[in-house]
Length: 589
Image (cartoon, rainbow, N blue to C red; front, side, top):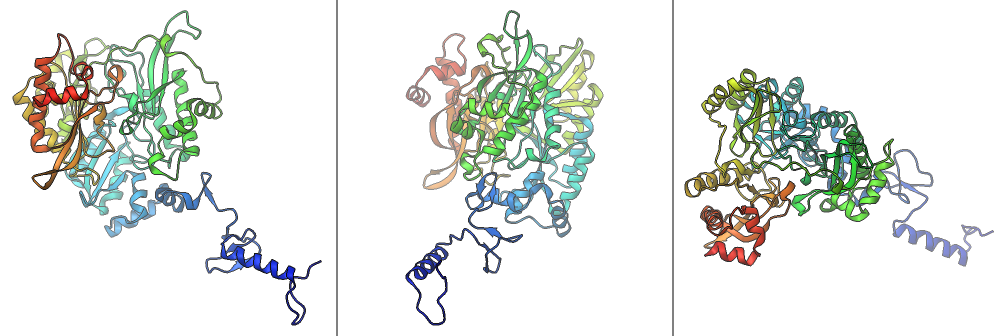
């Protein structure tokens, strides 16, 4: 047996020298498989509580801590759902968050949007897009008393209120809960607002009422902590199969109602098909998975899919952390196999071609007056320019919904709202009330399709003032052209594409461009995008157009189409049948 230490002053043997050389070489390489390390750097042979076993680095969702992205380390260090005491302290001190807390506050819907605004933006969840008049009044009071006196309807059919000071954030969150709403999980790495077709429940063409399933999923999420803190944000929608779209094909999970007729291998009736991995900011629509679900299976399947994503999504590279990239890596079938392991019933495969065709979407069916399937009732789509409402308009809308409807409003992904359940004999009075409040019930074919993200007045990522520019574009074009077709113009201020410029007839992506040697706000111009039955990604036809040159260019695009189109040809068909070079030449003549 080899003696490890020499007796008395005897020299080290060859074996002893080799052992010590190997031992110290291991220390130098920081590979100590049998020791832990205290905070003071001392070594011990036995790992003790609170020490790190450096041979087996601690992991977070199977990923070594050293490999995690910055945001994942923030979540590992302190669960953002458990920072209520910190929120209270910041309110008491009237102090904005710093470091990792800027990220953690977003789990509560609180965004410190400096440098665009040295204030908080609050994002509120409105599951299924249904909001009550009493809730809208409560939000108006918050905007008036603590915020900037206005709110924005977003492209996820929810509400954002801006310009809150830190001292008011606890009052804001408490009031939000008191009126039956929440902002929990509305930002950062969470499931964003669950959307549903805004006309669901009263659309004459729909296949079923999707609202109960959207709201059921929201409450399931609220009561399961493991559905927060995902690798990245996650979008889910429910489409009722009716005349108004919720653009479910742009979501991570899109549930689309379909009808299966007699003679099929499944019982005839209404089901949901499942679309996966839509992310138009990365130029991809959600794809049909081949699944056919009974409506009451959707919540369980959605939760299972989110859990598979949470456990296996990329937590090291934020650019590859969306669901799309997990499915790119695995393939759809493996993802569905892992999903099926988490539910108590088998998944049902059924060809999409054997389902009845979807009812066509009515363009701009979210604006104007439409008959409901309930006899003698109507819904009115209210024009809300670029989604911006003053507090006084919010109060007025709540009053109108109470007086002429049932106290219910619906928000849309097109940044406006609907007042449903209006009797025939009350329609004209409601319309007059809307006009008196500074809103309207009709619009031009241009203004009805204007969609704009927050822009650089409220978002640090945006290169341009998208909301201000959208209003200017609308006013300019309404004086110059009068298209006899609805046209959707989407303005987004950065590549995150919150306003989904890729699905607009005309998409505008904000950028800083050089004009006469000076950097100014401008846009890259895309044409030919669409969703649902018009699904397709817009193509870039012009790059780096200064905003001062943009309105005349858009006028040229629309007027050229009007002159050059074939009989009955839509703008979408016109732009898609020409090559990019042809379009550039036509629009530049």
